[in-house]
Image (cartoon, rainbow, N blue to C red; front, side, top):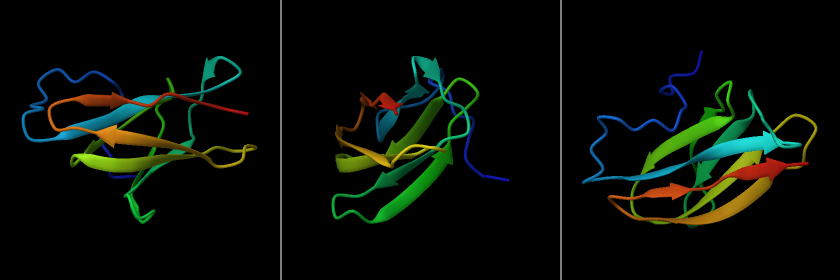
Length: 99
């Protein structure tokens, strides 16, 4: 069992004053993709964290400001990377469609 928090985009009650959030939806053929894994890599490409997508394809990470890579690992698809800049107090939205 994964120790990650529920993966949704509802941030009610979350204090963004001291953290950045990287979040989005993973989809395939215009439908949300449940059960994919999303990794967060730092600016040097080192693994930092991994979460599964929710039933609605959502994921989120709490991160420090800086340059990050979101890597999506989904059954039957090549790994897909997206670069993102996270900023404290903001939500960096990264939606990814896999083939």
